[in-house]
Amino acid sequence: QSYLSELLSSSGAYYKYASQWFEKHPETKISCVDDNLYKDFQSFVSREQNSGNLKLEEMFDNKHVLQQMETISKASNNRDLSLQSLARIKEEIVKDLLKDFDLAKEIIKRDLELNLLTRDEPDSVLIERGAKSDALVTEAVKILLDD
Image (cartoon, rainbow, N blue to C red):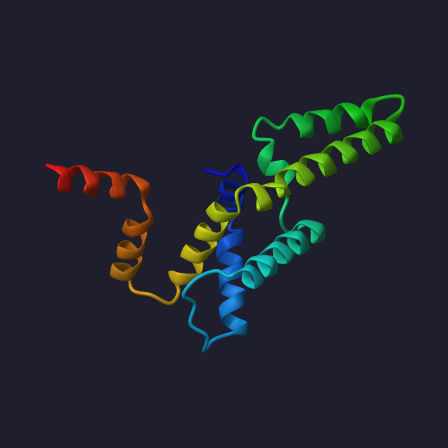
């Protein structure tokens, strides 16, 4: 699994993108996520992050260390310097997380595809499609066929 993909899923980014995409393209059928659609999703995530609608750094920080650092920074003698340093740390966290768009491209594409298809395909088609690409299912079928 990809940590970025998990964050995008838990934040609702896949769902929101798919909803907006189908509003703009109501008649278009999706069969797979191609590179253009993937780049559009990357742009969407960047826009959401930049506008403050998506806060990957906060979701990444499930122990609220950044929030604690911010509280300490506000109380310090060098408040402005501390807050600037904290902002740079947050930017670096986001930059590192977004690298997963390249490192885990296939996982993110699959998750995006699933979110797009759930609006357009019946459950039976989604289950069949998922079973075909599931490594565990493939291995189980191999074992059954060998016996």
